[in-house]
Structure formats: structure tokens, C-alpha cells
Amino acid sequence: MNHLPCASKKKNHVPCLALSDHEVEEIFARLPAKMVFRLRCLSRAWAATLSSNSFEDLHLRAANLHGGPRIMCMMEDAEEERLKVLTSSLDGPGGAPFLQVPHIITGHCNPPLISQDVREGPYYKQAPLRTTQPCRGLVILEAREARLFHVYNPSTGQIATLPEGRTTGVETLYDYAYLGLGYDARTSKHKVVRVRYGGCAGRLPLSTGAGCEVYDINNANSQRSWRTITGAKPTCWIDTYNRSVFLQGRCYWLAHRKLSPREDLILLTFSIRYETFGTVAPPPGMRDDYPHQSTNYDLTELNGRLCIFREFSMWHEQYDVWLLNGHGSDASWDLHCRIDLARALPQLKKFMFMPNDHIHLSMAPLAIIDNGRRILLTEHHMPTAICAYSTDTGYTESLLDMSSTVVNLVAVYEESIASPGCQPCEDTALISSSSTQALLIILRMLPRHAHGNLKLVCRSWRCMIESGIRRYINRS
Image (cartoon, rainbow, N blue to C red; front, side, top):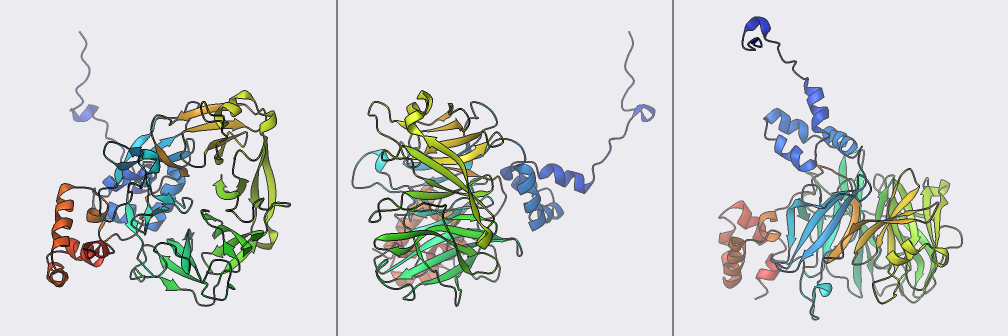
């Protein structure tokens, strides 16, 4: 019987070729974001490399190069009253199952991110609102019950609370604000833009109380505070309930020259680099049908281009999806597709109607796939499914069925290792645990003057007491 030569002998040993650091870095850049965080434990040198701005850019390009659109889904756990953030990649027909990311947004924290409304039932949960479209892996969520805004990375589960200010709380009749999330390529930092208005909405001139503030995420010089942009004021009124979109260095909002009643639909822009406002005209002939109600249009991003669309509803049978070319004075609109429900195939009509009650759902586009031949659609509110609509044939294919649970939002995001910023009370404010709840109960029972000494116990306690949670502790 012939035996193979022993590999331990020197004459038969073939040395393994070592990969260069550059080649290893290219491999790491193609891994999921949560795995990159684990690799930072290899050594101090690799920790520095994998935390650098250059590697963050490399990972953003490489990790999102292949596969279908990545879908972020906020799904409700009725038994534990918490929200699970799930992710999926639609690599092919039928899609892929949702995978749970490490972080769970829960209603058991203080301040809570979700709460039970006066009405009973899971459909009335006050779940976080998505106030912006995802920007290079980050998105801003609004916790309505806590009256706070959070920067969230669905790839890693990291979450950070924006610093409080005069206009970060609940909107009132006399003082309210809208947020935008952008990225400054010059400084390699994310920025949060806050456009604020004062006075009764739409009934006073914009010069009265209107202004703008910027918060620099992960900037050591920001000191967790907002910067007032002197001289930068919005030139129109941002419309309620619309999300901002960041593209080509600018944040976009749907707005109106006049708000009561709504007139002259227009897009308000804010340059992240130069921190100045501008406007873009809407597609030709586009106007609001109901000037005394919320606008029936919305913004999103489709494959790197700004998209404006009319919300699918029972009141319209024809829906246009427009895409923007360029920006500023050179901007122009292309009609990507027109969906005529009167001539739609049975597959689309079946997807468009709620089961057994023949009511139109409010639909919205998610992404363009197959080189523009198909467009992903889902419900605008409380989504139950994702389908792919062929712009050539009108054929509709169901990709994901989410009707078995309560889904609060669905969005397309990019795999990213971007940090949402410093979160002084991350372990206590946003993660549910018995020890955290016990600590909050004890702090709530202690007199206010005792908090000064308790801040000396450790940094975690100090950050928790100095954060916005203090409002809820001192309430009693």
C-alpha cells in the first residue's frame, strides 16, 4: 500500500503564502458590518485600520457591490412588547429570509421607544417613526412617546440619541422642526440638519423664527451640541409627515411656498458641505389635489436618484414615478414609469387590495432592480408584503410575505460600519434588562439633590443622570 509523503518533513513541506495587509483589508471590506466589529479585536493596528474613514468608504463600496437591495424591517413582538429590527437581502426570485440584527429596540426602557396607545391592539402601538431615508448606513428614528430622536445603524444595531434642544421635542403650534441626515465627503462625517420654524404654521412670514441648526456626528469638536447656521433660513414651508432624502451632497424635503392652504409645491434643498438652502422645481404639472390636507406626494431614493411619487391610494388610478437628473438650475425630471390601475394585470390588483374588503392600499416604491426593468413596491404604512412590478409587462411577483406579523416600517439601506455617534446612556436607556429597570426605579425614588453624588459612582451612572432620562426620573 502506497503511503502519502509526510507533510511534516521539510523536503515535502510547502510553505503557505502570506497575504499582504492590503489583500486582507480587501477581504475584510467584503464582510458584514457586525463581523468587521469583531475583527477589530485582532490587534491595535487592525483596530485602527478597520476604524478609519478610508476603510469605512471601502467597506461601503465592497460590501454593497453584490446581491439585491438590502431591506430593513421593524417587526413587532406582541408577546414581549418590543420591536425587532430584521434585515434581508433580495438576492434572487423569492428573496431571502429576514435575519435579526444584534440590537432590539424595546418598549421596556426609560424613556420608552414604543408605548401602548389609548386604544387596545397591536396596530395602535406608537412605534418609532422613520424621519429620514437611510444615508450611508444610518437612519434617524423618532421615538414619539419619549419625544427624542435616535440615529440608528441597522447593519450593526448601534443606536445613539441626538442631543436635546429647543426644537428636538414634540412639535407644538408655535415651535417645531424637521430633520435631515446627510454626509459631508470633505470631512467624512455625517451631519444632522434641523430646520426649525416659529409661530403658527404657515400663517406668519418665514422671517419670523425660521432658522437652521446642524449637529456633527462623531465630531470631537461638536461637544454634543447643535450649531446655529447664521444667515441660513428656509425659503419655504416643509410639508408635514414627509421624510428627508440625501443625495449628491444635499438633503431634500417636500415643501410649499404657502402652507395654509398649500400652494406652489416645491423641493427645499440643503447643501451639507456649504450649509446653504436652495430649491428645485417639481416635475411639470405636479400639484397637490387637496390643499387643505397633507400633501399626497412623497420622496425617496431609487438607485442613487431622487424619486418623487404620488402615494398609491383609493382616490387615484394612475401613478407616476419621477426620477431627478442633476441638481440646482440644471436639474430635470424623467418619468421612470406610469402605473395605470385601470389596465393593471390581476397580480397587481391582488397586491393592491386588502384581503376581503376591496380597499386600495397606499403603496410606495422601494428600489429599482434588474437594470430598471422592475421596481419593488410595498405598502406606505403598516407594510404586509413586498412585490416586484415589471415596468414593461405589468406583471407583479410577490417576493416577501410579512402578513403574519405586525410590521411598522420597511426601508432599503446600505451595509455600513458607520457609527451613529456617541451614546452616553446606550446600555441603560435603550436596552431592556432587569438590572436597568431596578436602577431606574431606585433613582426615581431618591431626592433630586442625591443625584449629584450618584454621578460620581461611575461614568455610566453619570451619563444616564445627565442625559434626557433625567426628565423622566425627576417627574415623580
